[in-house]
Length: 92
Image (cartoon, rainbow, N blue to C red; front, side, top):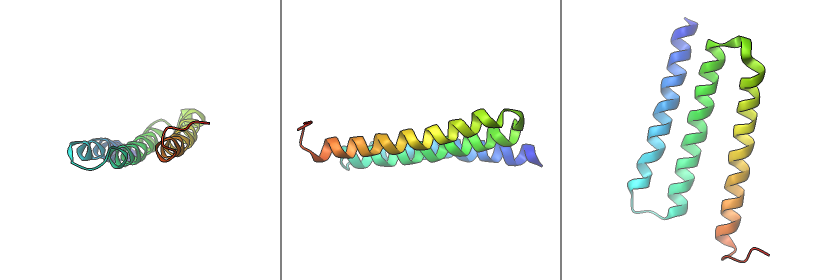
């Protein structure tokens, strides 16, 4: 049962990865494309890590650290990109 749940999480995570790339083909702004890609990629990666956590519980400290780092890194990167795009190129 754990294997089925683990592979389901990994499959859903891979689905989110591909789902996030489809807005890149649209006609919207670059910031919208980047936002949708980063959100889908973050969710997909987190779900894959949860699937790996179910499959390999013996390495849970590393996987939890990966989840925390992924959440912090992508949140900070989103704020930096939003700040840089809203300031009009003035980085002082």
